[in-house]
Length: 295
Image (cartoon, rainbow, N blue to C red):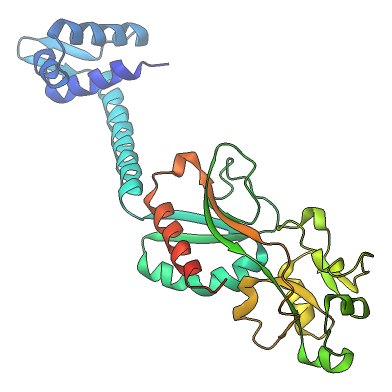
């Protein structure tokens, strides 16, 4: 394995044409530069320079090494510039993950304005009710509804959300409007498929609201957006998060005084992206848009 310090000195000497000039550039003595080049030549068992009174000329092997080192250093310089730009300019790829429902219902309709404001950001969305591993860079940032468990993630609280209970007009026409939580005993309740795997804690609270004996659901769906569509079809009654209010205009809010447990929305990303400009502007975008909502 070649020593990077020796390669840096070699590259400077090859461009400067002398140990003295290279030493001035590197702030090293002529003898220190000469020792570094001699050590590199010994490790490679070849001569890299022809030495004569007028200066240094690369040997055939030295020319080959110089071209390769020059190309590597040029690429490293380019990467360094891109890294610096990512901290100073909102540019580059940004993969966002969140739940299917929040991504489909709330985020996707608003993302156009963000992309228009920041055309240099290459946006992609990964919608999944499971917890994507940010530490393994399966995504850059996440919008989550439970407190992140990984200690190496940065989290920013975005909003506190609530549930509202909805039904379709045709359902209420057929089954009637419940007047109290206890009346839900006589209604068809739609819930999340497996409460233990739900993206929000205690999602199926409607089964026990106003009763000591848990109700039996008419349907289980493992996706909140799927629950919304089932309610929309007139199948039954369900609790939906605040952010559905913009798309639930054809539904009727049932028992408006009945509010389930609140839950928090977090913006989460790895520590290494703390100073990324594209992450910062996206966080600020979310805070601005969520502050406009009447949650």
